[in-house]
Image (cartoon, rainbow, N blue to C red; front, side, top):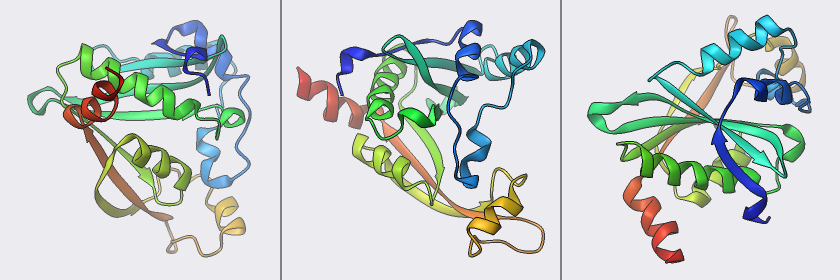
Length: 195
């Protein structure tokens, strides 16, 4: 993967139209990442919700001139100098190292541009690809918590395909891994080595 082919920039409204062209996840545990909108009003509402002034920043991941993902900075706690990362990628580009490179660009930008010393995230235990990516970058496991799955709408599809998925009569559950990386660790691992 050539890093020169990957750019991170502020997400613009026109980028929402690129998201409509993304592929679709065929694993029902990831259906909620499939971009569902096609009308102009839905796109505008999604964009406004993602880009709340002073509460959330969204960056486009551009690969060879095409928007293939986005990364958010959200839930910023200025007093603790801490923010949370969220990421979504076109399923058709997964496994190519694009996400890893984009996250490194994102961390470099956030730690340089904001008064933030720690970035946190959470990911489901079954998302082993994401966990391996985060560990490779330097994120550390803080805790694991059993919680209701973030998307209950696909319960039937999930249980048909994964009958042993943790559930009771009302909800699906998953172990979420809470992870974090400090500015100091990121700089020592990536920035100082390249100097």
